[in-house]
Image (cartoon, rainbow, N blue to C red; front, side):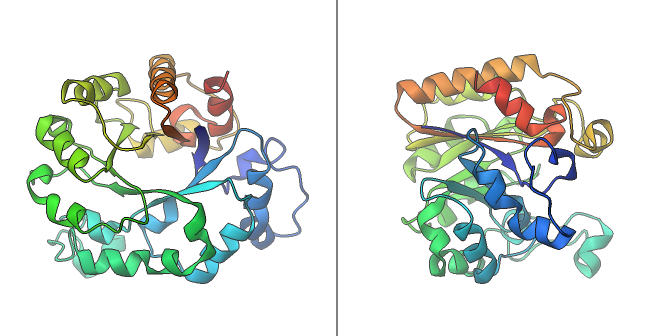
Length: 282
């Protein structure tokens, strides 16, 4: 099954396109828009991007679960407190900015993060948890194994990397050992999807029971510049032709192997995620 969806869903630029309901307030829009999103015939998944910044509350997960059909599946990003080795030198990190993260790859923190998912009805609708790792100087494949060994079997996991040099046999063998997927990502400092697929194939292929791809930004264009270029996300502003062809190759391969395939699209990739999905699904 091919599951198209978007990175988050609360976007004013989609009103009149995806959202036709007259919401009484911004609060109502944020609380109820997912139900309207999930009725769209092309959307079979969505990414809970905000879980990257703050562990979710059980009550919020219950609300999300109640708004989508039984065959809908969520993708959630794992809390950054687990995936960043050094806190970025940014004001939002306060006294921790620029310092080493003692919770990097912490099993205890992962258990804490996953706990509300275990307790909520959303557990039945969870598709994939994505470990989004930043660019780093640490050789991630050398240190990641201990955490992957302890992943709970109840959920599916994927690893998204931002270092081209990790895309080799050591990395893919590690993922295959623990039935974890590589998250193909179209991101400004990474090589294209085709290169990532070729490297996976060269290493013997992916053994996970699913494929997942996240289409984030054009190659060579930073997130910040993509925001400036594509806001308010109400139209396609720059078609990524090569990316689209690569995604279709991944979908074809997933169909041939009968693997569930998640395709998550960000507005910052072409300007309007729903229209990108429409183009990819034809």
